[in-house]
Length: 333
Image (cartoon, helix red, strand yellow):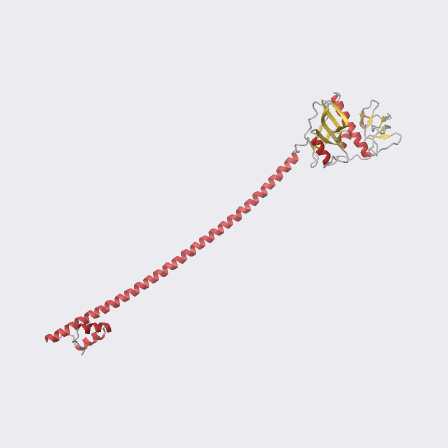
């Protein structure tokens, strides 16, 4: 909670009361004229002293040297000033008082309060439930707007909650602004619903920065996810390549086995054909020789017994056995 804008502690008599009972600012007081101290408990004679080297502006002093506590005086004085200003407005003597809201963060005045319409009276220290308002503006005899004056102590949260529960608009005015004759500034209250434009700007900037941070975080997460996906893709491609290489190796190995099997089969086939050819030739001779001998015919030219034996010796044992079984009477010489 922000405190008053201007510290006037020590200015015991900032305002005076004229012979007609109205409050007068020192700048409108004439020198050499007696005025009354506006504090009800005092009422002594006071005069205005012109600005000098010590005081840069006119100020009031007690003629008899009287004095009173500064805080009580400022608080009471500010209540009387507010009440008189509202009464002058209701009487048509003065225009409506300017009441602006003070932003405690940026210390600027904004958002003019316009809830004074329809007012019918003003009371000081008026009772509202269990609380009393410093100044109460009435509408049709009922409480309408409560003014609390803040000089050194702000309205506590408990009182603020009770004022809000009564369903009466309340404003906490800066007493130093009131005492200085400046436009009224309220620091907080039920009317303080719209934030100042700088607060809105700060909120927008903070939200935008938060969105930028979140966008950067999302971009970083997306980049990490993209890198992870790219790595997974590379792994899959490598696995596919390894599988292709393995398959190629397997295919090459199978082809090599097939070629080797074909080569072996070819050799077996060639060997078998050779054996068949030799066996056929030998059997032909073997069949021819007994026939020639039986018939008493000469052997064909080039077919001697030795060549027969050589051919017969080339047969496989089981082939020889088969030949002997087919020609039991034949014996190799």
